[in-house]
Image 1 (cartoon, rainbow, N blue to C red):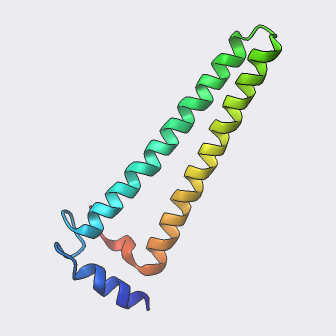
Image 2: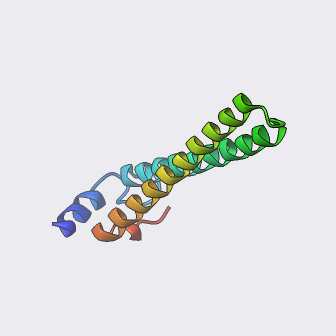
Image 3: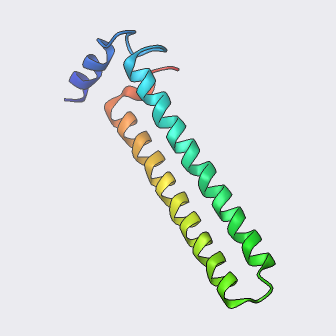
Length: 99
């Protein structure tokens, strides 16, 4: 089954290399994973700054905790997406496609 999928991907315009449909999909997936990690990191950093400047104010502290929580959830989702992408590419043998 996976060899059939790989042969279909290799028959796409460009043969699975740079400029091909599969290469474009991989580049787009990489972009979104990196963007998700970056946004999560910025969210976590912003949450720490909020927490540091809250000066013990209950509402500000709660807002900072919420920001940190959502940043951590975003980081976890980005990690799961990256792992799923790697497992899928390795399982199907498409990790050999070069960019």
